[in-house]
Amino acid sequence: MKRMLTSVLLLAAAVGLQAATVTLTVNKTRKQTITGFGAACCDGAMCPFGSDTNPVKLLYGPTSQIGLNIMRMEISPNFKGDITAADVGWDTPYDWKGSLPSAKLVKQRGGIVFGTPWSPPGEYKTNGTAQGGNSDAQGRKRGELRADCYEKFFPWLNSFLAYMKKNGVNVDAVSVQNEPDWWVDYSGCLYTPEQQLNLVRDYAHMLDRETYPGVRLISAEPLGFDPVYSNTLLNNSVARKQIDIVAGHIYGHAPLGNLKSAAVLAERYGKEVWMTEHSSTDQIKRLPNWHEQLLFAEELNECMLAGCTGYIYWYMRAHWAFVGTGESQYNPGNTKNKLLPRAFVMSHFSKHVTGSTRLTTSRDMTSGQEDPLEFSAYVKGDSLIVMAIDTTKVGYDLRLKLPFAVKSGTHLLSTGNETENLCQEQAIDISESTQDLMVSMPARSLNTYIFLIDQGSTAIEELPAPQDDEQKTYYDLRGRRLDRPHGLCIEKSTYGGSRVIMARP
Image (cartoon, rainbow, N blue to C red; front, side, top):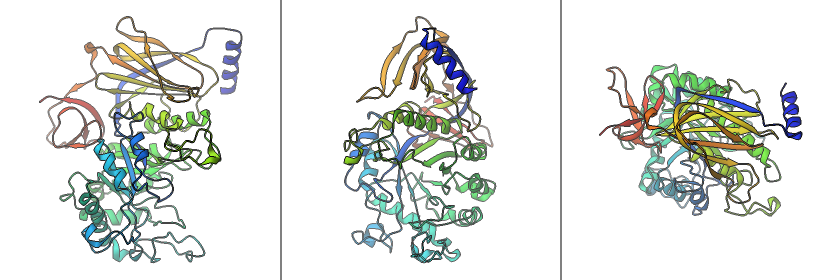
């Protein structure tokens, strides 16, 4: 059916007929509030940038072209001679220095930094090494956290927090484990869902939240976002209180599969859902083409539709990522420390969707099936944002039926034809306040339509009086926790869900 529709539209375009019209109805139903978007602080696996902060300078902060606000870094289990016991305030020095300069800059620009262990220290594990054990050289011995070392795990995370704080970085969150379900021959540690439950339920209270106020605990991050890992935690009342963020990766599983399943229980209990690692086309021996960039846009969009509140890409700097490496085999177009097309694709979401609350639409995808047209919608303050992705060779007229009257608008367009700034901006002609209008959606394009809501139908809700049995937490629009609600901020409830509100002084 999809092929037949595309053929008809191509024929219509060839004979000069009017472009087909697609209708999108945006509803008032609110879903998750988006904390933000980011990437990992590394060039290659476990290779932090060190003193080179060029990628962060290009990508992070509200005044940057891209607007990332979340950075992931490794909590390394490896010893390093240039870090002393005095540095960490603990009796074991580890290789944590490489991420410091980038983390400092991200924090200075109002961002969020979190750490993920690929493995606990080797002396805590069944195979005696930080390696996963899946090689002949490593004896094919599965590396797991020894039961008698469970009580050492969270004090070890505390030592990481201590080191970072002493060196000027207040870490916002720490994770239990990178890919606990993937047996590797590099740094890794295996946990079953039940083993993770035992660790969190019985020992996560040892995470020192008093010394490091505001630090949040992220669940282990399974390779394919297997919901059994997070559901096992959330179905336990003790473990559920310790976990703040449900996380995972989407290798081999489309976002509207496992991720969406994991988000159901997370939303019920007011937990955030972060996709903390994935990369598209990372093995290709060339720069990604524009169609592959649009597929990346679809991945971002589908993560939002699945209930994701934070999306963190893999490397910041790679020929298939956001910043060029300068490697000659991937030139032209891979100039070192120059923004790549994928960064501008990300900017549609990171600069505009961060801090917004998603609204449902008439064309929300409900599963991982392919669709040549994808949409999503958001509200943020007095702005209404509509995303539209067209991967076909045919352009459309997009009719928008909006839940609020709008009085002006801006169209941000990426088609892959530009050589520098891949995000072009033009005004949307709106002669009078309306809830029904037509906009253009060119062929092979990524579109962000940003509308100013008429004050007569404002999207900002007054702060309601709290219920006696309900607990709420508040964050600013960059995802930083607030002691009390103030101005335009994000409200999260223990009953699930979150929204942007205006708190009166």
